[in-house]
Image (cartoon, rainbow, N blue to C red; front, side, top):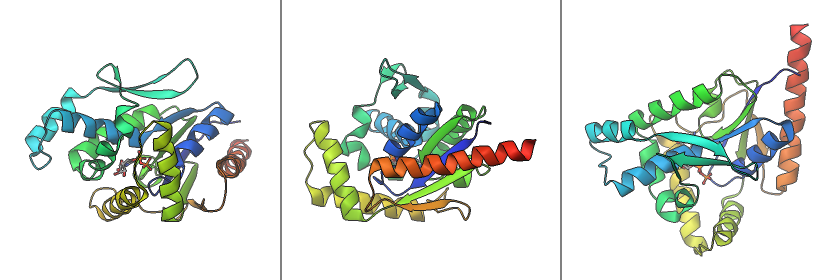
Length: 231
Ligand code: CDP
C-alpha cells in the first residue's frame, strides 16, 4: 500500500497525541508531535529570558535552537533540544501556561513548519498539532480534527499530569485549556481551524482505542483509494 500523510489537529488535550502515536505504531509510520516542538521553544525562551515582543531576540533564539526526534528503546519518539531530552520538562504547567503566545509568533511558526515539512517529505508519517492539515500539509491524504467537551479534556489531562507526579487542580487545567483554545483559534498566524476536508471526531464519549480504530479505518480507505488511482 502506498504511504500517506496523516494530519491530526484539534483542541488542547483531546487525545491527539495518544491517537497519533497509536495509529503510527499500528501502521508502522513515523509519529511527530508538533506541539512538543512549540513547547520546547517555549522552554528555551523561558530559560533564556527571551522577550517575545522583541523580534530580533526571538530570531536569535530560534537560530540557537536545534530540535530532533529520537526513538527510544521502547519505540517511543522523544524530543531533544540541543542534544538534551526535554520530554519531561516540556509537559509541565509552566510551559502550558506560556506556549500559546510563543506559538503565535510568525518567526517561530515559520521555523517549525520548515522542520515539519522536511520530516514529512517521504510520507509514512502521522503528525498532530493545530495547523497540520491546514498549513503544514494542506495536501495530506487524511486529515482528522478532534474535539471533546472541555471538562472531559481537563480530567484526562489531570490524570496524565498525575502520572508524571504533577498534581494540578481541575480549575487551573480548565482555565489553561480554555485560554490556549482561545489564543490558538484567534491568532493571526495559522489559527486552529478545521479544514473543510478534515474528518471530525468528537472524543467526549469514546475511548482512545475507539479513536485509534476510527483513524486507522479512514487511513486504510485512503491507502487503498490511492493504490486504485495509481493503477
Ligand atoms: O497536548 P496539548 O493538546 O495540550 O497541546 P500540544 O499539542 O502539546 O500543543 C501545545 C501548544 O502548542 C498549543 O496550545 C498551541 O499553542 C501550540 N501548537 C501550535 O501552535 N501549532 C501546532 N501545530 C501544535 C501546537
